[in-house]
Length: 316
Ligand SMILES: [Zn+2]
Image (tube, rainbow, N blue to C red; front, side):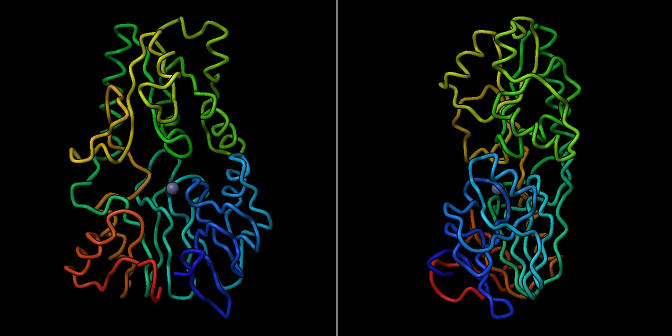
């Protein structure tokens, strides 16, 4: 760790990993979720082209951005469009990672490495997600029931990543609308070649009176039950289904007040995390983000040297 966050050195250069301030020789940005984007551009940023474009769409200019640096290799991390992990020498940093296929996203395949720095958002055994196909059929059943009663349905998920996966997995429902913020990101995905169905944004649909013709399905970001948007949609009688990995555990109740919850995540579940660590062949694992102590302890129980990456001390 450094004052700028996580760092590793390779070939005499300092590589900062998802830094808040891009002040290293090379500043690796794994993906375009806000908590992984630098507040300030500075030095050379290493990121995929999709990450650069998505960051710009979200108002963050990555400055001098390259998609290749000699000696460093990016691997698709299967988390969202353009997300990558980084192999520097024999150290692999996962960024946010998902190893299961979901719609247009292919599950990550991690490289063999000696040292692994891994996220563990869902690093507790109670987070075991059902197959994506099972979640889809449960949702389709629910939407069918609502359609039979003329009730519109809003599918909610994080606006970058989950919302695009939902747009694709449930594209067979019609008519389909997107919340304006989801439409903007979906349009960028379509420009990048992701086959998402074109659909009107909610403001346009509302103005044209399309929402009065029920039922319909809309894809929206996670919105609190008390938000203006949800209140407006309630006037059409809409019910909400939210999608998150947290729905897999009863201990972490989802508090945003959606009518239904479905376990669908852009991260590895517990078994997938363990499998990913084992396949990497890493001799030393550092855990970051999430249940860092519990997951490291579990790995030690499997005979793998592991500990949380602490705010101070050697980063390996
Ligand atoms: Zn993320």
